[in-house]
Image (cartoon, rainbow, N blue to C red; front, side, top):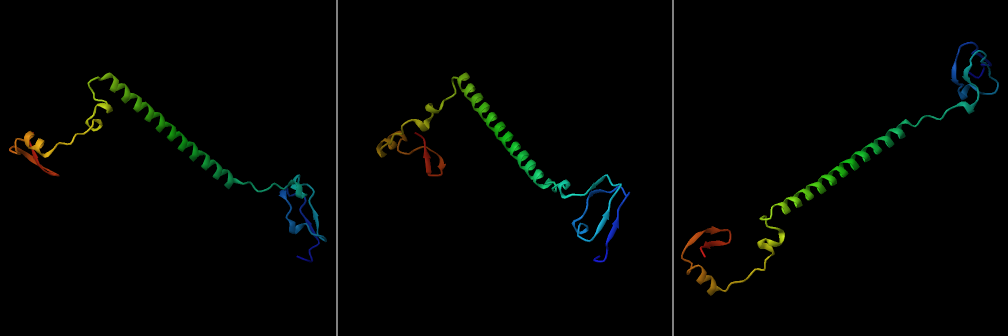
Length: 136
């Protein structure tokens, strides 16, 4: 291609830009009749960054979905707890947390008190995980 001195591209209705390899000294280009052909470097557009746009859109949509699910979860959790608290107030016979056996003070019994309560371990109710269970 070193001996090539003239390229006639006239009247071909070409568009785009002329490659750098054809823009060298000593080579004459005839480009008349090509209105869409770009003759300078200023009309070249940088390549579109479609990959970056796809990544940003994917991350944004995933973040939106996660935030929406989190908001729905929190709203439903608050509604459920408010609903249950309303039920507790509607049903006065339902024991509250303060009325349960676990919150009352436990009392230790002496061995002689246990013998008296169970009538000397006479009536066996069954066997539990910690041993025999007696009536009393």
